[in-house]
Image 1 (spheres, rainbow, N blue to C red):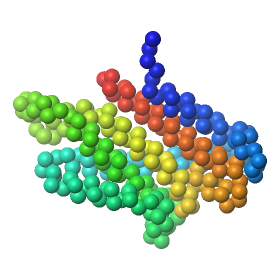
Image 2 (cartoon, helix red, strand yellow):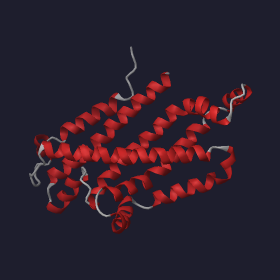
Image 3 (cartoon, rainbow, N blue to C red):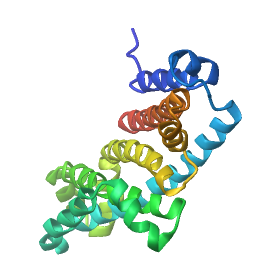
Image 4 (cartoon, rainbow, N blue to C red):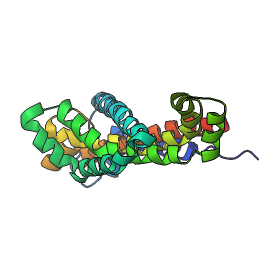
Length: 238
């Protein structure tokens, strides 16, 4: 009997949540509240904007978090490791809503303050996950590479990163879920995301629209997680 793929659970749950965000189903789930569901086209447009903004933030977080993780694990920068970690922790200590509010006067409304909140909130788990994945590479593997005459850069590229690849993908899973959730907060700054019907629903007591936004947001998180789980499983088999 073949084992169940690890991505199957999140994939099915994400698909079910996406289906539940459909206006007809959400209206039934929100029975008893205001019945003003978003049209399918409007919900899809918000989901696309949400996905683009979250993916952009995730890409920035991946570059910065993994880059800082690489620096922190190099012997020559060992003295700065604790400081780098503390700065990343400080960035995440500020709630995303506060980051968005403080950035509004400088960056204006829309995507920029949301991206800043995404980066601030996602760097620490990405940095720590990267450090953990690279630290998991055995000393013996590095020593064998050194014995073959490989330079530190070659050891990183041909030994450390391939062995740590699955761990890095797991790190990005955490960053992805954070990116999707924080992007919803961007609606407070005027960004057109799936947080928009949640904020508007709170203001107008529109329970169905709130449900649609929340369900669709969770759906994106689970579907993205399923994709990275599948990638991680593939890397572990390689």
